[in-house]
Length: 70
Image 1 (cartoon, helix red, strand yellow):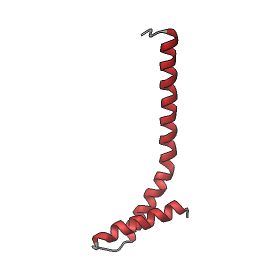
Image 2: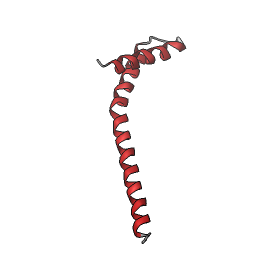
Image 3: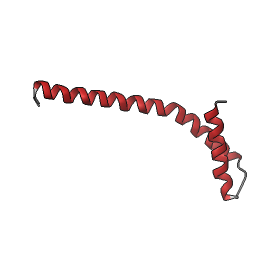
Image 4: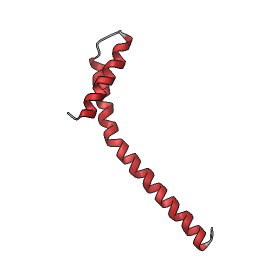
């Protein structure tokens, strides 16, 4: 288990335990799952954002060099 998954489980457990209604185990499971999903999605979203910014910059540079031929 990765450290981020363990930290997610601890945070989820603490948040779920704050209500005092039930066991903190379900919060730990949800926290671990959230950490796992975030570990996959954050790099994908970051890569998409950087790619979009590069394409936007290239489009702007092309328009400045060649003029806007819409």
